[in-house]
Image 1 (tube, rainbow, N blue to C red):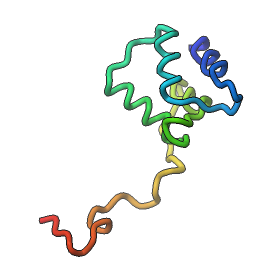
Image 2 (image 1 turned 30 degrees about the vertical axis):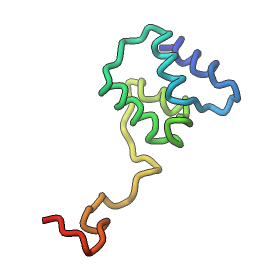
Image 3 (image 1 turned 60 degrees about the vertical axis):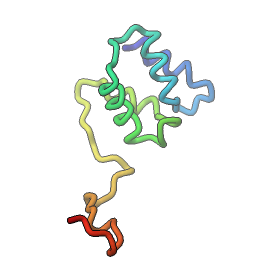
Image 4 (image 1 turned 120 degrees about the vertical axis):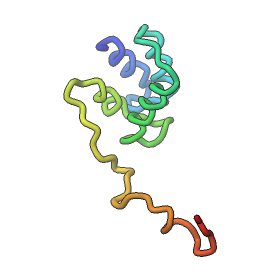
Amino acid sequence: MNDFYEDLTLEDEDSEGVLKWSQIIKLWRINNLPQLDQELEEFLLWLGMRNSDGSNRIYIQKFFSIFSEDYLIERSSHEEDSPFDAQKQLPDSVDLE
């Protein structure tokens, strides 16, 4: 994994600490890491985007932290304080029943 992290930081040409998801996946494959099925790749993308600015600006350090032994999924700065409630989101004219 150290080679993977090193490659991620080298790929960051602007030294901003961000990469596109496509770059991360390319480096994953180059480093011969275990093959990802579609579901696992989508999950890693979701984890990477939780604390980033979309799939084109994934923060390398935050993404790589998901591979640490003590990683805990914490609240994202993008999450709303209250859970989604479809009743509140729909106009009054929509009947769900």
